[in-house]
Image (cartoon, rainbow, N blue to C red; front, top):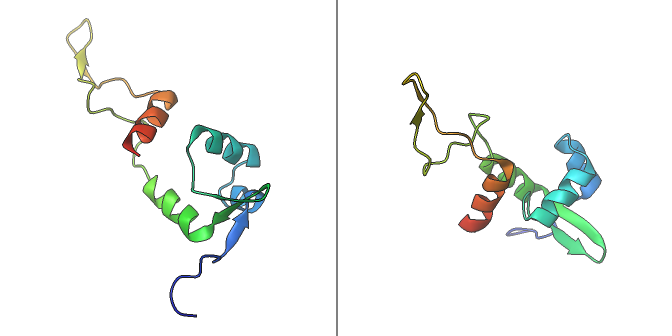
Length: 101
């Protein structure tokens, strides 16, 4: 078949959750927060395209467990020691992701 098949490997929520080592409830919560891989609604069922889930996963690759915000400047402790800006909270990260869309 030539071109892209739109029905290429559609996964149910439980299958994707298993592949990502998550609980299905985590994917459900992410959908309500506007986070996570793109999905389809087929009636009352949710389906994920494997290639889009893989692309979402690659786009969320990190090299650090903290999220440094460029708008936060480093600050000095009382002893004059220069320390990095505080990491963003999960809520701030989700807000930034939504703002970038």
